[in-house]
Image 1 (cartoon, helix red, strand yellow):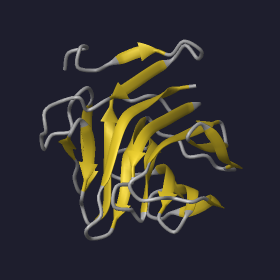
Image 2 (cartoon, one colour):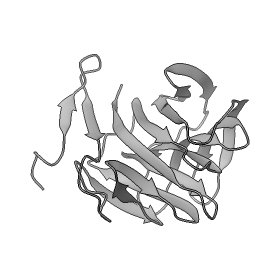
Image 3 (cartoon, one colour):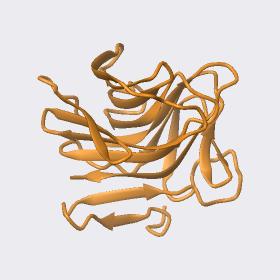
Image 4 (cartoon, one colour):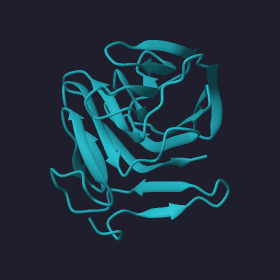
Length: 194
């Protein structure tokens, strides 16, 4: 894989690795526009320069290269389109098989949450009422720094929690849980070290 395909840069304030994906490519069934993506559950396509999923159930994709496991963030623009059960970028995937990590989720029942997903189970570690509107664009950001896990929506810190046994992993990605007939779009994905 050429370095031109992996849009890597140095984050000015933190001095670490940053990976970005804009999906500015022709409509395709492949997610690989700027980065290499591994689909871990169900699928995504590139549609109108965005990653789109209409899969019924959980859909996840993990970006390569790895960003590291300590003091990291993930951010993406999310268009809830027809309203989703839960959607948001993911972070700290231990590997593409177990899907371990943190999910920063917008939930159709008008809440936001940080979900801790160790291998085999998931636990909501922070939740808050938050109006989620269908066909609305949100910028969702998650940060993990030591044991502190934070979620931002449209630039405002909405949730913060200390995880006594923080999950670590090397990869970031996108994910959603969709019911039949729902879809979601992601754009302007970014992940890196803080």
